[in-house]
View 1: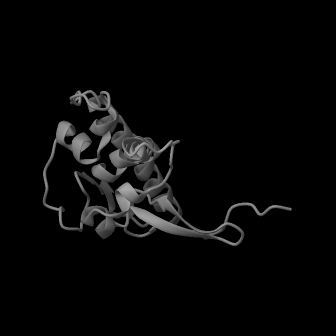
View 2 (view 1 turned 60 degrees about the vertical axis):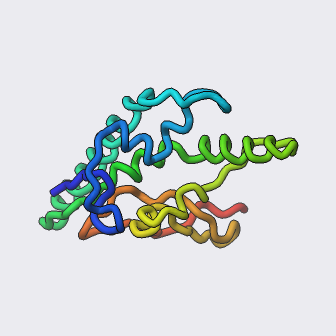
Length: 165
C-alpha cells in the first residue's frame, strides 16, 4: 500500500491537508520565483511538485514490488509530498538566502550550499528529512533523506562511497 499524503505519517503536521499551491509555498519552492525586493510571483511552481511527487511514489512502488517478488511480503509506503517537493529547493534556496543576507550587510558573497533550511522545522525533524552520513575519509555530513518511508525495508547505509587510492 502506498500513502502519498501531504506531509507523511508522524510529526506535528500529520493531519494537515493541502493542495499544490500551498504545498509549494510551505516547501519554500515559491520563494525561488520573482526578483529580490519585488513581490513573489506565486503559483508558478505549481507544475514542479506534482510530477516530482509522482516520480518519487512510482519509484517507491517499484521498489516495494521488487521486494514482494523476492520475499512474498508486502509493504506500507509512507511518502511525504512536502519532503519530496522540498528536495527540489535544496541548494538554490540556500544560495538565494545566504547571498542576499551577506549582500544586505555589504559583504561580498558567493553561493553557499547546505541544508540548514530543512533541518530546523519540527515537521522535517520529526520525519528525519535530513540525515547524517559518515564516510571514513570525508567524515560526517548532512544529506537529504528519502521522503519515502517503507515499512519492511527502511533505508540504510550499507556501504560508503569510493575511497581515494
